[in-house]
Length: 86
Figure: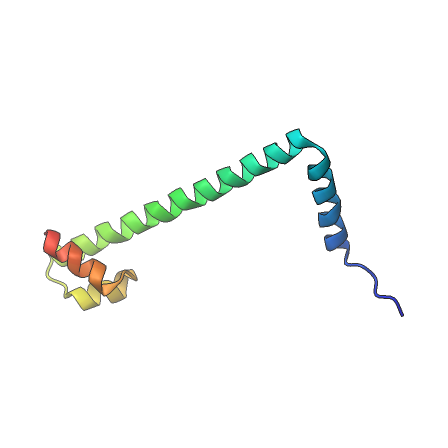
């Protein structure tokens, strides 16, 4: 019995062949992938900045460092550094 190839793998292989044979399409694909990675990176950085600002607000109200870390998901050392910065 011969296993039937997975249609998604066959489709992916066709796309690879297409992009490998067409330089313009390949560079367009690479450019789009870079844009996606950059967008995700910017979103991740923005979320991290927001978590730091929330941590600073809690620290200003006197919430202990370990509780701020637990509530924000930030590392205890990072929250302690934010506390030291004032």
